[in-house]
Amino acid sequence: MNYFNNNKLSIGADEIKSEVDKQLKSFEPIQHKQILSILLKNVCEIDFKKVVFPQTEVLKKKILELEETILKQIAAKQDSEALRNELSILKEDLAKFKLKQKHYIIVSIEHILELAKTHDWGICKNHDFVYLYNGAYWGLFDKAELQVFFGKASEKMGVGKWDARYYPFREQLDKQFLSVANLPKPEQVDNVVLINLKNGTFEITPSKQKLRTPDRTDFITYQLPFEFDPESIAPLFQKYLDKVQPDKDRQKILAEYLGYLFVKPSTLKLEKTLLLYGSGANGKSVFFEVVNALLGGNQNVSNYSLQSLTNDNGYFRAMLANKLVNYASEINGKLEASIFKQLVSGEPIEARLPYGEPFTLTNYAKLIFNCNECKYQQN
Image 1 (cartoon, helix red, strand yellow):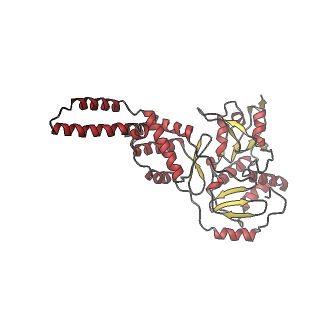
Image 2 (cartoon, one colour):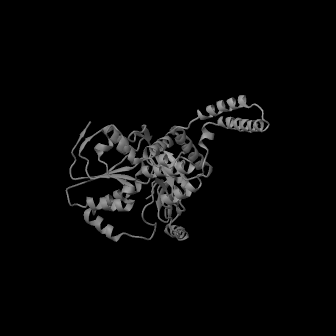
Image 3 (cartoon, helix red, strand yellow):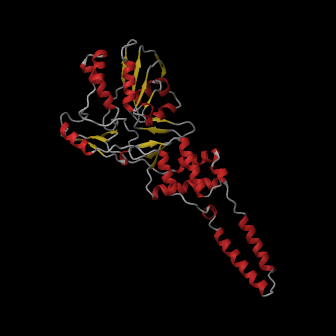
């Protein structure tokens, strides 16, 4: 499909195949556990008291000097009572500087952020989501996985294991990270369509098409579960289409919309949703299963109802940030028409995660619906 000027893509099938032949390597994502193990090796022990209370270094130096002087006076059989009193006061002052849990939390996260920037780790934060680049795409950090990493990192820095392994402490590390992390996602280029596959990223521009090596600056958050092959055909799927929808123009609509899933609103704004309507046993469920398999299942496809997506709290809308499509089987129930129009138009829309701050989504999943009948109530 050409979403730009008609017939202006200059690379033909032979040239595309030549590009494919150059990319024999399969870009398998590295497991998060393996990446985190590597990252943890860069974490070192730190002196929390020195970081939080740098003034204690001066006190320690004075105490050392006094102790040496007192020893000399004792050896010389001189009166050292005044110096001992002064030493006692200094030690009392030093004892007042006590580390609290907040100090360990703040310093641990600051150290992790510093390491991330210094070593150019593939970690970024977008809204309240954290991503890790795995060599093929930016994988969403599981909340529990992230908290375990923070706990292990803080323990290696010197936090006692009974704190570092305690789940409330790890939750506080997570919240601190989300509140202060300045690891923005890479800026994306408009007027370019990217489709990430097992053997590379297929790039479509107004002037060319090519398969290239995945690039972390693309900020692609998925990888389709198959390789790009310009010579492949799908006779079984075509047979299915010819049976359930023999109209070739309508078959093209299905193909066009599946292609549209990969296009950012800033590149092309069709303001369309796909609705498959009809009685039961007419092939809608098969299409649903094919699309799910094609896009990699639950990792890239959500199934929230229209009622859930248009409710006031915005929790379900927030989950569209990391999906290619929301494919629901029914559209029954209440809906907020104004929010539905925003979603279909691809306009910036408000969302939030539970216990999180509201944020504005700009690139999010497109919508597909199956329905036997349409029964909804507009608010």
